Length: 376
Image (cartoon, rainbow, N blue to C red; front, side, top):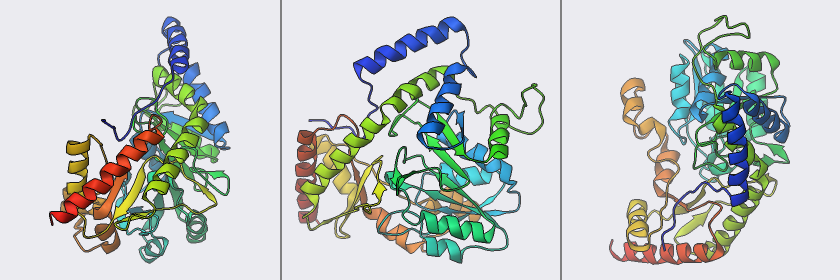
């Protein structure tokens, strides 16, 4: 059996419906900035109970656009080291200085106490990442802290489509929420992203920025870029959004199967969400005992059993060569992330995973752990 770590899902009915809309779009001649993009924005905002949604062509673009209104030249933004490099990169592109914070070992999300320690007179804001689809359990604490300190709060919700805390959707706690629709994500547009906000002025500026800084009269009033989402991508997104609740239900079912199968394995620690959180399970991370070499487990799972796995994220951002060379970050700066992330393994998670697949994956994992342990 071969099991991919991620896979975008489209039912036959969804594919047929997409083709109908694609035909209509192609015949209209309106391939970008059209009615499907506008409808996608409207429905995504409504789904998340937000006032404004601005579609862009990637999750990275969502972060880039969201940060520009905050005028970051000479300022600092606190970001988690446990994230994809797009998060700190967006701060650099916006003219700011990313300040890395450590993570909570029980959630893999940013450590709120470390955030508080790193605030300086130069701090402009904080970016929180809902890792693997878990809404950061301390998000309300971060929200209150940022308001009290006069800092902006941006949610990198690339993993967290439809995830909730106390019923409130990811991406609606801070000033801005940023989403990715990359093919591995909970829902996809092939490539694409979305910005959520309740701030009318920020939404208007984001719409201007994504079209090379041009206003409705096509006059350039600020420095922007081409961050627009195409109509074909919007069509795919609309039909994926229609099935998002179905996707989430299946991912949570798969997570329950994993938990049942692996809950009593001594060498594995599971990351169970609090009861007031609905996880989106973009990925299913677990932590291997320090005596287990994660890289050897990943290689053996793939080569012996055909099971693809992943990680979130190793090395952490502050140990990437660019950040070490440009900003002087070093091993030892953020010890929790450095220690824990080395042991985080992500099991396959997508709509096509069955209970039989989970049984096979878990048997393969246990066998691999025993094999790797005996070869130490």
